[in-house]
Amino acid sequence: MAEAETADQVALDEVVSFTSELIRIDTSNRGGGDCQERPAAEYVAERLAGAGLEPCMLERTRGRTNVVARIEGTDPSADALLVHGHLDVVPAEAADWSVHPFSGEVTNGVVWGRGAVDMKNMDAMVLAVVRAWARHGMRPRRDIVIAYTADEEASAVDGSGFLADHHPELFEGCTEGIGESGGVTFHAGRGMEIYPIGAGERGTAWLRLTAHGRAGHGSKVNHHNAVSRLASAIARVGEHEWPVRITPTVRASLVELAALHGIDADPDAEGFDADELLGKLGPAAALVEPVIRNSANPTMLDAGYKVNVIPGHATAYVDGRIVPGGEAEFRTTMDGLTGPDVDWDFHHGEVALQAPLDSPTYLKLRAAIERFAPEGHVVPYCMSGGTDAKQFSRLGITGYGFAPLRMPAGLDYQALFHGVDERVPVDALHFGVRVLDHYLRSA
Ligand SMILES: [Zn+2]
Image (cartoon, rainbow, N blue to C red):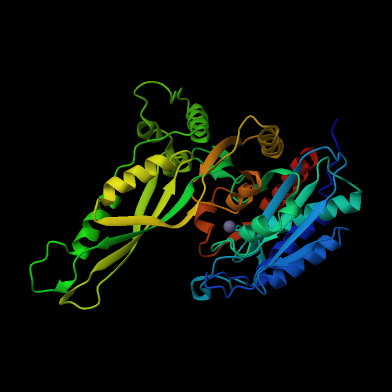
């Protein structure tokens, strides 16, 4: 039975004004702890309260505010669903932009500013939907827990990490969650539109490498030079060719993307060459290429203090990313690459995630996109980096990346993410509200 849409004109107007007004609240997160999400948190809390909900404001650090609210479902025996979005944004240099990045300007059907796609758009869409439900007396089947988080663009210790570790009671019953990255049009060339839904994330492995040696005068023979040892290790790490490791989500991405290109791919077949297949997928290869293997990129070096002094130790940092299930191999490989004279440890680590593709949640997410973008092709994908879903996974919540937008061909969504002139068309926001409304009502 077709239910009437609850995404009415008020919801369509509100999503635009909420996105614009949230952009105007500068929540730049430079990572040094000076970000203040509180004004944005108050903004969303007020609007949730206006929909008859009772939002809680939670802070680990003054001004780093998170907001959590629960909508009671009609079926108390059903598992709850988490819907989350972060309130902070990455910084923006106003001089580089065509409009002021915190103006929230709406011009010719486009909303401009930092956060327009990452991710004040989704924050606004969720507000618009729950307020429409309140107007229409609509209640979902399962409980829906809404979380607006602080600090996603840095370590999440003041945001989702704090919520997961110190307020698990607010997420009671949540088995699945939807959040950042996914459900956005990917233009794959020749008019093909793909809607990748996030169903996994590589793990984060930020490593510190420390080389030890014998300190001494720079003019003397020294076969235990920490700088040379570090340099050799770092070169081996940087040049290492990681083997292809196809996880279930990536396997599905490859098979489905290949099919869209008229190719019958079998990743389980002997001699299957993932790189060769990627070469035939055109722009769509970008959805899979970063996640078919582990990676480890040296990013920082620190050694020595004077040209004629050989230091006793030298340090480097490596940005490692690990495919789901790839941690043991990652460790063994790093031990081998760094060698006996260089130690390494996890400076910061976060788990890899993988979500099932045969779950009712995934099927409903796909159906919601297909209903409003029948010309589009939904494909699961694994994210190369991470989102708040990692922290919420500590509560046993399976995360999907789903913050739907229909983006026109001329706008490169990936470039807008953390980019200059970040912006989102009003039409894209309207699509997002309709899809979210439809999905959440069917969830
Ligand atoms: Zn984000």
